[in-house]
Length: 133
Image 1 (tube, helix red, strand yellow):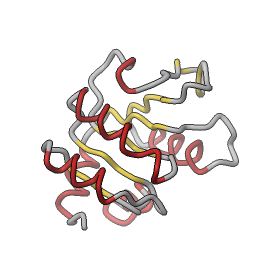
Image 2: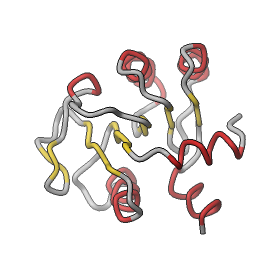
Image 3: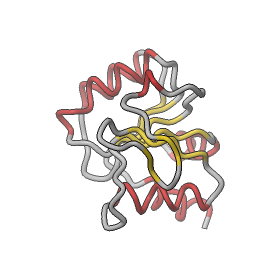
Image 4: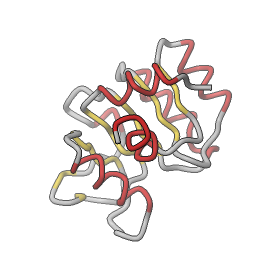
C-alpha cells in the first residue's frame, strides 16, 4: 500500500509517461493526461497505435522515449503490466503508477525490488486533488 509520503514524492516528479494513452476524449487516459498537462506536468504519450496525442509525438514503448521518464502511469489491463514494469526498470524510471482498477502484485514487487516507488489501484488525478487541492 502506497503511503502519503510516497504519493507526495511521486507527484513532485514532472515527466510522466502515460502508457496506454488514448486519443479519444471519452477515455480516462485522455482525460487524466490532459489534467496532468494542465497542472504543469510533462506528459509523454506511449501507445504503439498512436502517432501523436494532443500534438505531441507518441512513442511505441518506454524504451523509445528520448527524455528521462520519472513516472510511468499505466492505463492497461493488469495482465499487460509486467512487461511495462520491466521497461520502467530498464529506463530507470523513479515510479510506477497503476491507475484505479489496475493491480498486479507480482509486477509491483519486482518494481519495488528494483528501487521504484509503486502505487496501485489509485487515480493520480484524485490523489493530486486530494493532496494539493
